[in-house]
Structures are given as C-alpha cells and as structure tokens.
Length: 403
Image (cartoon, helix red, strand yellow):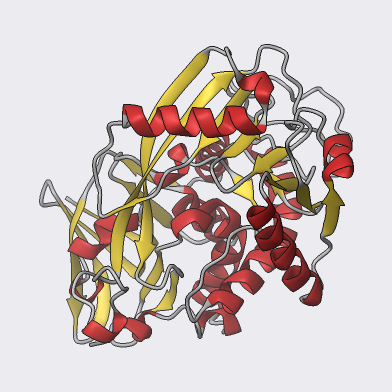
C-alpha cells in the first residue's frame, strides 16, 4: 500500500512535530512517521537556557546565537501552541491560573519565562561562573551577577553555603511531554497525518532526488520532501552519519551522530517553593507547575541503555540536596533515562542534503532540542514551503562531516 504527501518527516519528537505543525499551517500535506521509541523530548527537563548551554567546539558562537534567537521565538511559539492545541495533561491542570508574566495563561505546555539562576558553592566554581557572566555580558546578554546575599534573596531555598550566582532573567522552561502532546494535538487538528509505531528502514531515491521512504512492513510512502528528525536512529539511514572521517570525530572517536545517555529523577515537591530553575556544576533542579521537581542529568556518551543507574541517581539527588537542603526527605516521583542525539562537535545538523534534492536534516540537537525547536521549525518550514534561504543553514550543514 502506498500513499503520497508533500512532506514526510521521520521522527516524532519536539523537533519533528514542531516542523510538521508549522508546515501544516501553511497548507502542505504532511505525514509524520514516529517509531515510538524513547524520544529525547520525553526525557528532557525542558529548560530554555542559552545562557548556560555551552560547547567548547568550533560552533560555540553559532550555537549560542541560535539558542538566543530561538529563545526569543518561544514566546510567540508557546502562545500559538497553547491556543491551538487547547489540551491539558495530568501534569498541567493550570489553564485557568493567572500568569505573572505577559505570555498569557500557563496552560497546556507550562511555558514559563521566569529566568534561571546558576549557583556556585565554592571559590573555584564562583570564579568560573563569574567568567561566564562577564563573557555573556560582553555578548549583550541581559545577565546579572549576584553575591551570596542577593542569590538567597532571589532564591530563598538555596543553601547558606552559596557564594555567588548568575541570574539569566530571560531564560525559562516548558514541560516537554506536555509540549509534545500539544504539538501532536495541534498537528492532527489541522489534518496532519501521524503514523505511530512505524519504522522507516530505507530512503527511496532516484537520479539524485528523494522520492519517499520504505517502512519495516515493506509499505512505501512517497513525497517530494523528506526530513530526517529521528535522532540517533537516523544514522542507520544515512551512512555518513555513522562513519565520519577522522577529522570530524571528537576526541573520544565519536562518529557524526551518537547517543548520550542521561539519567534523571523527579521528586514530589510537597510544598517546597522554588522560584525558578537552579543550575549548578553537579545537577540542575527544575520545578514544574504540577509539583514535580526534576533533577538531572548525567551524560554517558555511546550508552544506549534506558535503565536508570542507581548510583548515578543517588549522586544527582545528593548534589541537588546540597544546593537546596529542602529537597532532603522528599518522596521520589519517578526516575528515568533518555538518549540525547549528539554530534562529534555537539552542534546540530540542520538543512538540505548537498547531493539528494528534497532531503533535509533536523538532527543532533543534543541538550538543546527543546530550546531550538522554534528556530529549527521556522527556518526549515520557510525553506521547504517557500524556498527561502537562511544563514542558520551554513554552520549547521551536514557537509561539515563529509569524508
């Protein structure tokens, strides 16, 4: 059995669904194929934090600028999605609650632009964080340096041992599973086609152009455009992603695209009041509007297992309790492990394939998938629907991994 679409998107995480929603809004016939595996979106904490997401690679500047651009897009993206999806989840029973900011009610996706605080608890950590603050300030970021007393005034739950903090007032967060559910609902309301538990096993091409995909059940779907947004599983479809040349491999010999396991847990807040997300060198602490407090996250490259490691979870909880003593004794709500799709230079792969016309990539967003979803969706939708070029394609092209 065959079917045709204007665009097929392989991958139903936040990147793929955001693009599908944007394209469907333009009237295109869009099919999303979601294998139903462990999407990185569902395991993410949902921080929108370009001020804290750093890479030491050659694309550090481009990645920071992309994060800032996408953060600014999140306000309108969240407003539109909240209005259009009109859904609630068990984690989000707050649609009628008034918001203290001007982004509207905190409903379906729990978009919160309350800022993020980075806290230091040693002299060395304080020095490093202050250098980060100074560098961000030079780039025009609206960041503030807080001494110990000011840090505790901004976040009374911090331990008395805090020595200084970086406040990024423009950073924020969303609830990733709720965001994904909202995107699916909005996409399907617009008539988009979402194939769940379907696996793509081959790209169909002819004479240098994409024609569609073949599924595991041997059915074939045809389209003028195919976008790979399937995370680490995309490496099985594009050989160059799994066998990058020696110059493109990281110091650990990483291929172009590989998994990074992240363990995390959530505690039941039980009335503990946290003003905003707190980040330290040992853990991040992310309060959600349903009372959960998400604590994460470890990073284990090339580990594709999804069983949380007990020792890692215990270490995360210990580190978080040292930052916020009020976490001690709180009941564990859940623990989990997720797979971040990383590249050897820790920057995403976004844009057209240089050899196969009609094939596009939206891969390798690592820790920044939720943050970069609006920017990635917008620039790819503009290119696919209107042929518009964007300067963001240049640094994040797959061509940097050519052998």
